[in-house]
Length: 293
Image (tube, rainbow, N blue to C red; front, side, top):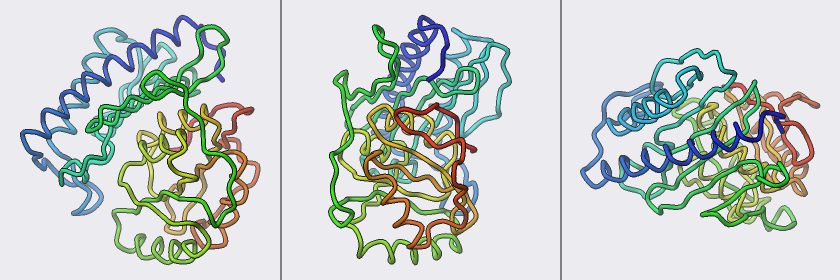
């Protein structure tokens, strides 16, 4: 955990939650009005809506007004350099395809990084109006995870064959084919698999015990910065490596079951490369480092 000034961390957490709430209200209103596709990115099915852009513009403006010297990394806009040592990492709508189709599983995700370490995370489930927050405890300084203000923790130990695993797929057809084969190999070894469509919320579901693990290739820092911090604060371990398709692969599971799931996903073929002892491994007792984007 970062040794940043506790008052600064409290201010960042309060601002992240305040701005995320406002962005979630905006997105909720746009959902009622109907989603409009503005552009595509990596493929024809990787869409950006007008609501994505409006949400990120709002978040950028609110943060800049209060903290003009901070850096900013958002999914839909240009990176902004800063001088304060604080960087905001934002996904204005995580789960854009769900949003486009009216499936109520998408989120606003905001994380604050201090001197290179992610210290604060907020994920708001827009449709269900559920707030997930990871922040240092005011009394002890320990990292805590909350759902609507109440503490959350990962699910208890279970054999691999009784674990429910979340996953997701790349927007690139050739990578999806490789991921499908790996998933087919994993499926007989676990209770079942869920593909819910939002990396940030999948990580929150691990944090609150609704999933026993999560594995996905093709994630970016803005997808998982806040959610992975929440999972870690709730007792999970998170790590990244190179997936079978050559992209960043993220694995998250309760610390007590992480090793078994990591081995199972390696044997199933999810990983192209897993560097043992990698410094970006997260565990409740270990240091917190940002993942590569």
